[in-house]
Length: 320
Image (cartoon, rainbow, N blue to C red; front, side, top):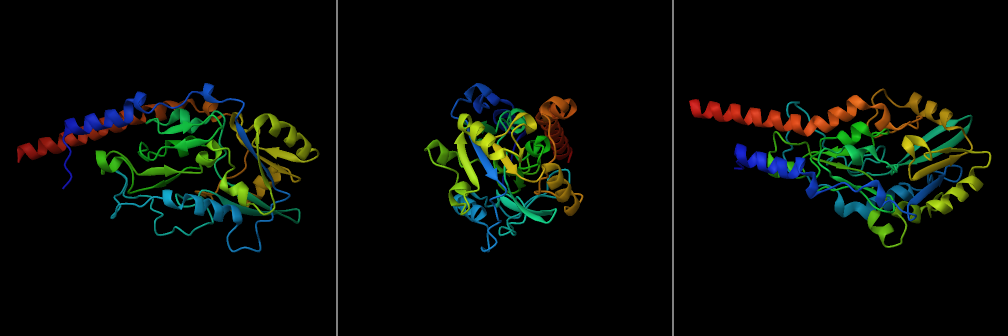
C-alpha cells in the first residue's frame, strides 16, 4: 500500500510544484522569425463529408495514438469533490475535444452556407496557460508550439480556466500526482494539440495540415503568412490573428465570424465543454487580475490544505 509521510509529501510537492526552476517555462524571447502560422481557409474546408472521420481528425489521432493516456483504475475523485474526468471509455468520441481527440470539426450553417471549422489549440503567442501554470508544466518552442509536459502536469486545470477557448482537457488516473499523493495532490493530466512540435522541429508540417485533401490548412513562417493572409482575406474576414494578443492559428472566411459565433452559440448547450466558441477575445491576462492571483496562489493553497489534512489524520492516528 502506498504510504506518504508529511515530510515526504512536502518534499515531493515542493520539488514538483513550487520549485519552478526545475521545469522553467520558456520566456517570450525564445520566439524568433521561425514562428509558424496555420492559415485555415474555411471556404475550402468541406468537412470531408465523403469520409467517416475528417482527414485532419484521423491524421491527428493516428499520429498521437501512442501518447494518449492510460489511466490507473479505479480512478479516484478530485478531492474534495466526488467527481473526476475520465474519457478512457469514450476514446472514439470525435464530436468534441477530449484527452483522446485533440482536433475536431464544428459545423454551422449561416445564410444557407455550410461552414466547417477545424478546432484545436490556437497556439497563442503570449499563451496565458504557459504563464499561469502553477507547476511550470507548459513550454513554448521557437516555432510557437505550446506544449504540456505530461511528466510534470498535476491536472489542476488552471490552463483550461485561463484559456479563452477552454481548450485543454483533463484525464484523471494518470500523471505525477499518483506518485505524490493520489487523493490530495492533483487530478490527472491536461491534454491538447501541441502543433505537432516534434514534426515542425524537423522542418515538417503538422499531421492535420499534411493530410487535408482540400489543402485548407496552410503552414507558413509568420513573415510569409502576413502576406498570404492579406491576399487570401481580400474581402473576407480573419479570426485568430489579433485574438488574445495574437495566435498562430488564423481562420479566413467569407462569412463574418460574428455570425459564425452566434450560430455556434445558439446550437451549443449552456455548458459546452470541449466545444469552443469563436467569440471576440482581448488579452485574458490583462483583464483577469483576480483569476491570475488566484491561479498563482493555487499551489500554495492546495499544499496548505493537503498538509493540514495530513496533520489531522496523523494526530487522529496517534490519539487512538
